[in-house]
Image 1 (spheres, rainbow, N blue to C red):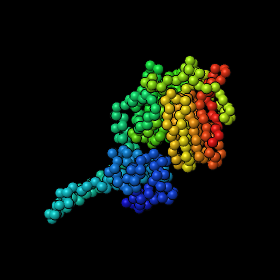
Image 2 (cartoon, rainbow, N blue to C red; image 1 turned 90 degrees about the horizontal axis):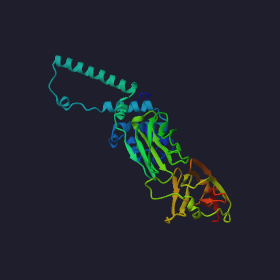
Image 3 (spheres, one colour; image 1 turned 135 degrees about the horizontal axis):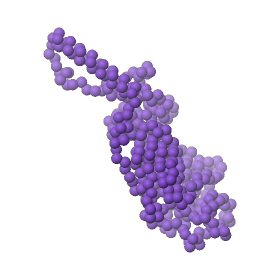
Image 4 (cartoon, helix red, strand yellow; image 1 turned 45 degrees about the vertical axis):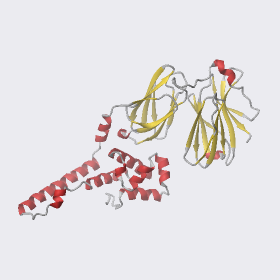
Length: 375
């Protein structure tokens, strides 16, 4: 089908051609857009039967087209015209072979003209009229509430959906309240506004310590009917968790600061320790190994070979030991207590082994420290 810009390529051919012109594989697109491989392939093959509803087709088509730098209005208009053209002709009309009289010819001609006018009006409506029907149908959905007690939760949320988080005997509500140019999330006493792939932490019970981290994985600007893919992570144990933080009486369980194995760098300096998170983002090939330290239950060491674009989040109560084969291939952040601190880890091609753990000093305060070990 010929597009309004004179381009005779179909939708799938446009998408596939632009992707190949940019030197991208389907895997590259999946990682960058967070659209599953199944739907990327379906769009390129124009196999729209793979999608659960037209809302998803238009949403993913828009996201994929924007990522490739295509004209979104022309691309979605081409899809809508294609759907109009695919409307079936009634079987009885195809099978009617009776010779037409002059009167019947006139009637059929009038009906044909009327059909053309109606099709043209429909095309004009789809091309130039804002589509509010999807938004209206989305607005009629009842908001959902999800109980969130520990760990990490990722799913698609719609306006009005909320998390109920129990902490220290109380429950706190965190809601998705808007999807426009940015995503708006409302927590107790705080409004969080995030763009695509942005991240923020929130103190939801007002104790001065951030308990919740949120990341906007995927959403289409000004398309609330499409929802937003959000990732939430609890940064401290919830009221239902069996884990407990150290109190003053457990200070002896955390060893004093010891720099004998290397130079210690202070990341956080706090009155009390709390669970923290190490986030790793990979920019190249790297073998990455980590081990949770100083826990009541010993955890197995974990290692993986990572490639560009992958991420790993590690949450610990007391300490983490990390090992990486190429320090320049990864960026690390320490997250906790409202802090988000980048870590210096070494030079190009350097093999690094480090411990990151809580320690107490003679003044009764606690320090989250980073210590380089000999490897």
